[in-house]
Amino acid sequence: MARSSLLRELPTTQRGLRTRAALVAAARKVFERHGYLETRLVDITKAAKCSSGTFYTYFASKEEIFAAVLEVAQEDMMHPGMPRVAEDADPARIIAASNRAYFLAYERNAKLMGLLEQVANIDPEFARLRRNRAEAFVVRNARSIENLQERGLADAELDPMLAARALSGMVSRLAFNHFVAGADEVDRAPLDEVIDTATRLWVNALRISS
Image (cartoon, rainbow, N blue to C red; front, side, top):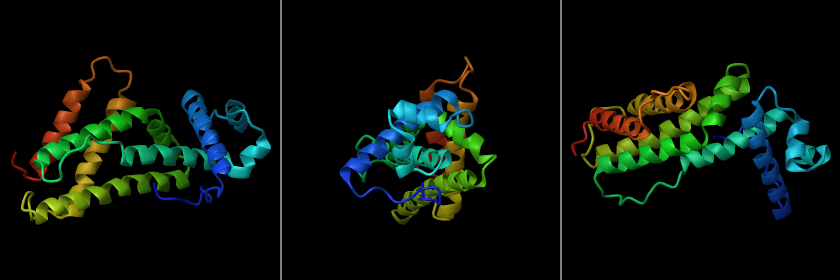
């Protein structure tokens, strides 16, 4: 997630980085437990076992530390530790592995994604943050589609950026509906089926033969 006006520069010392990271980790637990609107700064400092003075050394507000929490989640979702797959492997296999890594990362961060959806509806800054998050995935996926086209493995007539917007939006919304909007449904489809469906749609849309 691109750095926004809510985030200041990182500390320059290792001690400062550790203290800031501890605050962010504590804030995440509090936000996930109480929700964004109900969380107070005193809840965060209590969970982090630090003073309000220490908090204000690194963050100016609840909004700023929430943005920092989201940035950590975004890093996890952009680089989820996908199982190693050779670059020249079957493209469908690579897409399947990428989708699985994304859905598992989304599952780890589902509570935060739900909070971001709520806060973005009332705060323009977080709405922009959400758009930046989505755009980061679109740009990365567009590069992958373009690479497949150059290798003659995907429909060359597709606009890679437009295709990436359509497919990224599909997968993102599918993950949101599965982990956030439908979290309490007892008849949800198994995760493996959800991932397989997303992969099949992605492969078919790009006309990748496998």
